[in-house]
Image (cartoon, rainbow, N blue to C red; front, side, top):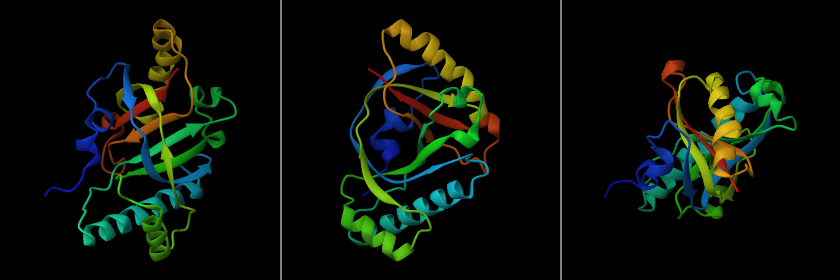
Length: 196
């Protein structure tokens, strides 16, 4: 039996094709997560968060596989916010706050996460949490992270007003490419914004 793969099971969320904004319904999911703040390109806190998440994610995968339920570790995801929303259009990254996450299959329990944390001793405080985003605007962005400004301006100034929608909750990104191995112009990022 093939391992559970988030990108296959929730293809419309993890392998979308649309490069223009479209609406999707996002079911409740659970994630291991770490909160932090600062520039993701230079903050040591960000590096510790990502390393800790992957350490716990792989510990969960191997423990689950030993118990008879294998899964593919999902991509890194992030929720982003700032007290000053212009920090995103001006790319004032030092003022950004974030929650980095890796989605977990439905059978992963708090006890399993606690065991994985104890086994790996992560350097950042990893926790299990649920996220229920519901109706969202979503797009596949191809290009550098810094080139997201134009697509976000289109969301807020064109797409949402034309659809009679407004943003709610936190800006969500799913990183489908490894920036260590992929040129900036080829990075694939799912950008998602819950709406009302």
